[in-house]
Image 1 (tube, rainbow, N blue to C red):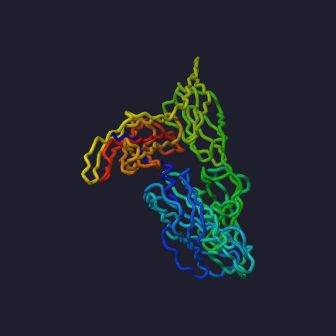
Image 2: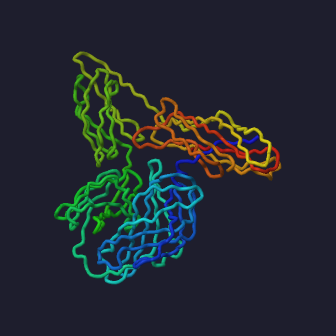
Image 3: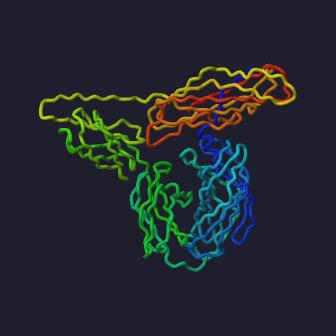
Length: 533
């Protein structure tokens, strides 16, 4: 009998497939200020999906052959085939390619060319097709008169899968000293623009005030966050921006740091207006706290009393939910500021209220309870009632352990045999905002003699997943396709930073075995291993 368990690609595997290593477009002939090199690169796929090393052609075309110090240059990048291959087939993955160029000669340091976000479709086992892209960078204002030569330092691609951003880095192993483009620097651009972020260390998720001078009057500006050396610039590090330039060329406004994905320490904020660019220091730190403080202006009063609540040490820019224990009314919602503080009012609406309860979206901590006594003018007694819900576990069970495709009589043509997967039930009782992925891997089907085999890829499946009533979150169904030694996802639940996830979910699949046209007669068996992470 043919036995197997259902397999499906995990969220991590799908994210890893969205690699932005290299395009399949042929390198164009170099123009002035342009060239093509073929260094050896080492690419690391995200989420442990593998590594690859090999040559890759890189063509960089600059729109100028000469520029003044501090001048803006547009670069076009065309990448050859990458040594790394996609692990799955996916369509329309939002992808942002970048390349870091090291400078030598009349200037030193690193500049980054960042392309626009474009949808990319990938096919399992083939290189990721990154089309040619364009972006701008600024020659340092400190550059001397002479020639600046550019070499390829690093390529980083950012992909978005199921609400998460993943980066794939391709470092140069050898051939990195080859010049891919150059530009002559001379003259002066006059006054250079400035940009400065508010002093201090800024918490992730907070707003940062930004100022500057000597910009193009009334120009639209863009902002990105770079490493301290000016490399790895990413606009996605800011989730919002109000930056604007007035008629006198003064820059002002705020940028909002992403809540996750930014390393602690020194960075640079880079601002450009299409003609000029400038950078300034910006230090960041993730806010880590389990202590949320809240005080009230009164701890007792009759029904109708308005209580003012002051909060400190809450997660910045996250919603705080205020309810009364024993209150029948809807909650009061308020958002903590960039500094983690808030002020809110709550009205006592029932003589059954015993506590004011505060909790925060996406925070994996117990609610804050503030005792409150409702007075009625007579004698009353109150008893506080509370309950603690401890987090449970992520578990799975299956309805059976064997799958039988039956039998087929060989006739010189491939035949298809169908069988259902034994239903798998996943229970997520952790009570947080976590996600999970149910995956599997299939072995070859081996005859009793231990020699003859039917490849695992001859078995394909079409998953079907469902969430039971009362579940807190939906479930995503995996993509139909062949099975094999690479993990594929049957079902998955995405994490959610704004609310609790979890519930009860069922995973089914229709399995199809395509028999070889010719094979040794006999019984074949294999194993399908399901993994829940």
